[in-house]
Image (tube, rainbow, N blue to C red; front, side, top):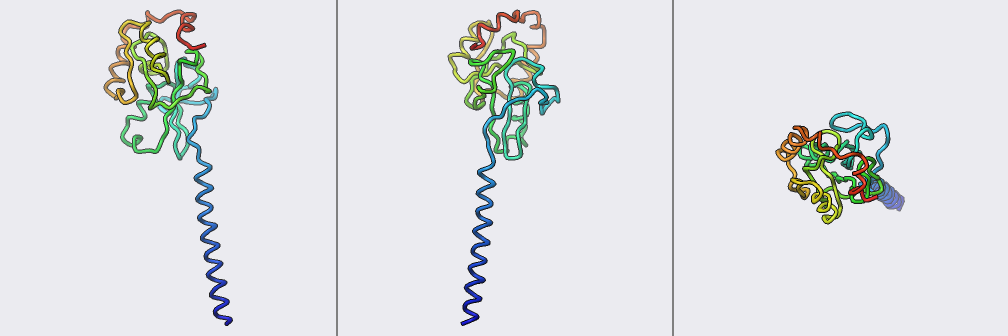
Amino acid sequence: MKNRYNFHLGFLLVLLFGLSLAGCGDDEQTRISYDPVAFHGDDECHICGMIIADFPGPKGQAVERDGVRKFCSTAEMFSWWLQPENRILDARLYVHDMGRSHWDQPDDEHLVDATQAWYVSGTPLKGAMGASLAAFADRAAAEELAAQHEGAEILAFDDIDEAFLAQAAAAQHGGMDHMHPPMDSHDSHSGH
C-alpha cells in the first residue's frame, strides 16, 4: 500500500511540475509583442547609426522576437529587410503613414504595416539616407502625392528590391536637390 501511495504521489508531483513548465512557456509567448513602438529623440538608425529624429520623412521599424530595429527612413528599412539573413526572421515591418502625418515630423500614432503600404518614389522630398520613399496606408493618398510631382511612381511593398533602391537613390542624389520645395509646401500632402 505504501509503495502504491509513493508511486501516485511521485506521479502527481511530476505531472504538476510538467504543467508548471508548460504554463511558463505560455507566459513567455504572451509577453512578446509585435506591435509598433514609438520613436524617441535618441534612437539611432540600425543601419547607419545616425539619430533618427534628425531627419524628416517616414521612418521604418522591424519588430521581432529579439527586439525592435529602428530605421531613419523607409529605404533604410528596405535595405535591411532585403538581406537574406533578415528575410527569414519572423519580423513585422512598420512605416509612418504620410497620409496622416506631417513630412517633417511623422506621427508614431500612424505607424502601419509596411507590407500593405503604398510607396511613392521620385519626389524631391528630403529624407534621410538613400531614396526618399513616402509611405501611405491608402493608395489614393499615394496617388495624390505622385500626381504633384512629374516622374513620381507608386510602388507596392513587393515592387521594391535592392536594384530599385540603388537606382532611386542615385536619381535622388544626382542633381535633384535644387528641386526641393520650400517647407510650407509640405503641408499640401502631409495629411495635417
